[in-house]
Amino acid sequence: MSARSEHHHTVPLSVLLKRELANEKIERPEIVHGQASQSKKGEDFTLLKTECQRMVGEGVSTYSVFGLIADTLDVCRVEKVEIHDWILIMGRVINTVLLSPSLLFDGHNGSAAAIYSKENLLSNILNAIPSDLNRDEWIAALPRALVAGFVKTDKDFQERAQMSGTTVTFVIIEGWVITVASVGDSRCILEAAEGDIYYLSTDHRLECNEEERSRITASGGEVGRLNTGGGAEIGPLRCWPGGLCLSRSIGDRDVGEYIVPVPYVKQVKLSTAGGRLIISSDGVWDALSAEAALDCCRGMPAEASAAQIVKEALQAKGLRDDTTCIVIDILPQEKPHAPLPPPKKQGKGVFKSMFRKKSNESSSYNDKEYVEPDMVEELFEDGSAMLSERLDTKYPLCNMFRLFICAVCQVEMKPGEGISIHAGSSHPGKLRPWDGPFLCLSCQEKKEAMEGKRQSGDRYSSGSD
Image (cartoon, rainbow, N blue to C red; front, side):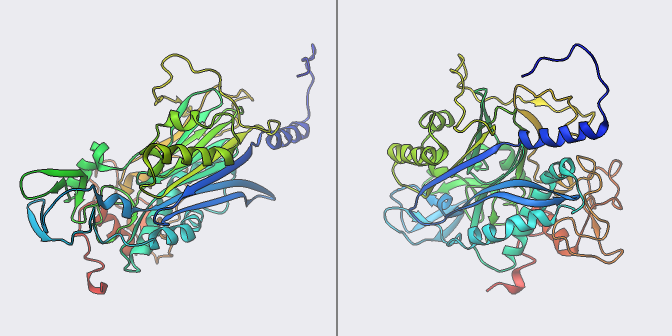
């Protein structure tokens, strides 16, 4: 870096703008990715799109999209047990068919939900973002657009009266900003170049998520293990009716609408040193810890790393399920290989949950006088299942939703047809029912069903086969 001049000179604004544009080009990272999988049922799908473009004023901005979409059939498997043809489930006796050596619940059949999500989710997300936003506004709009896109995809798929379901982990990379949305038990982790490890998703398995168990029971669902009738309970915690081990997914029409598609969303900004993302299905994470996954491929390029992680998982547990891994290296342009973190500090095995919070004084990502953070910055995080909270207009972009456009499905509504997202709110003093954003009637019904205010299945009962 050149030495600074002793004298201060006035620099024309046009020169500063040119420098900033040039600096923006230099600062954009290089995205290198690889994937690997071993299939048992053929129901894991990936979405890999680099160099996606969108118009910004008279220019073009690029971003990358990575998605891991895994069918939920695997989470309904009961471990191998000796049981009779009659099983007691939550106090109700049902007749079952034994499939030796394990029992599968029929009702999350096939890969239809995964395929539908792969084909429609990205467009549903992008359609929820206004077209006239600059780069900072577009990034700020992503968290709520992801919520709207996930819910619309679920709603449209359920209207097709198909019973399968899918987990989704969806990643959008714009510059150094990473936005992750997830439902289910696939996982996304980040190792920053500085050596710290971060979770960018959450696990929606009922077994390990107390908040989700409370939400489901408050909405009218039941949570419990499989009861064999003799008082012994087996397997993981499940949601009844349906027996799904997850609290969030896309599809799963027959399980109940308190199994919601509202994603956990986290948005972070890397330093310009970059980092490595690993997105994997539960076939990897049931076998490997995050540190084990990172350590087994340290120094390898992305493609070889993905293959090595899958290999390590299979060696540890065998091929019990579809096992898929995507590795993404986010690199400074001048560095051709994955960054090698410094030696681990003592105690580094504990995942860090603390991020440096972004200042609330400004929504700009470029107003820090060119001082880059030396760690990952958290820009946004929200895991609430309540649409009235996730689609709120206060943060981070106040003009995202149009008055006569449904905030979820983007359908045009006539004046007076829309229903406020805050209708029926338990905080009438803070939120008024005439405040937007607004939902169409069918999306309002979907919202009420997810919140337990309407019996699940009412809307589809007349058209079910």
